[in-house]
Length: 477
Image (tube, rainbow, N blue to C red):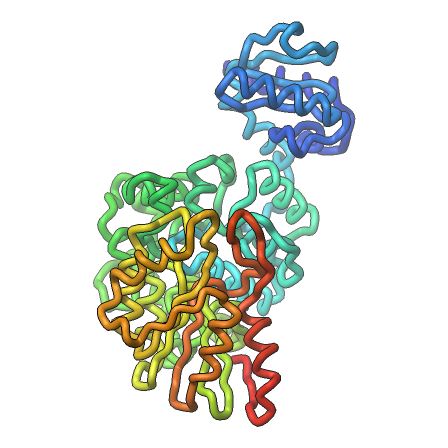
């Protein structure tokens, strides 16, 4: 009751001091950098000095008032603007966003997808499959946001909370049947998805990643699992070791279902078998397909409809995207950047051919996985090219040193820092019986180096240099 009163007081304050738009969330912002004229600024910063700094910034940007959890005097902010002191604002501000969705019908089915690997692929393949069934699908992902397939560039895997709600409101207004949200571990941990009631959540897998941010694997896993508590139904990859070993009874077991490639006797496993046709789609991660089938089954699509959707899937840019040349072998571009992602892609392609792998590791994070990545690449590759991959502020030579610790046979290693030169070299030394993996960047449009964005796209660059080989034919699969 007390929180309802607080919410009502905050709502009335916003309505009284801003008349910016028809929706409540048009009238306020929780980010001083995105304040518009005549908006109320809600300052959530827990440090009082930073809270005041953000308020002053919002005032300069045109705020018409503000709400803060601290007892702040006018002398400290030197403004005549109205303001409200609400100590519990951090507990109720999400409800201000949710107010826009009260009594709005019909509401779309909202699907949250998280996991170490395969989030984007699963999101976009599911969007394709549902669209094939004439459903309107809203998407928020690292590949873009909008009504699929018309996605605009997105700076985040999971945007800040206010932007997410803005997208959701737009999707409701456009009468989307489904909304698919890619949920990063940082996004879940930082509360960027708070208050969203997911109809379904999907956890593709959990492997080691982002340890620098989360400080431990346990914290990382718990950030991912947070999505279970805000979902009506959850679908989990039970073949993932870290998901298999969680305390399933800690969550609402009745609403959790599983997918698996293995024959496991468990009534909670969704039967996703669609016969042999599921086994011949090398351009797709099998678990992504299992998740697509699982959602469609729970949504009561019949087997015939599901099969048609699966058989009409197109490749996802930068995810196992295959280029076949006449005399220089095959090239697979993939976003893989974790040890498990490397293992998966190596095992699911024809490894009887000669294997050349071009890759690098990111700077300023996850240093421990560099040696492990080098070891996996060494195990499966007859030729290795190590190159730049988002070194950020770290020296490339330091990243290289860590990778080389995992490679036993250094004679098969070629080091070319320039990613463009490395790709050209790979093409030059390739033969018709060679399978070439270009790992890490996928469809990204830039390389992060020394706090700068260097324009580069693996797909576009490979296509451009293949054009110079007149006697080759190139095929996107």
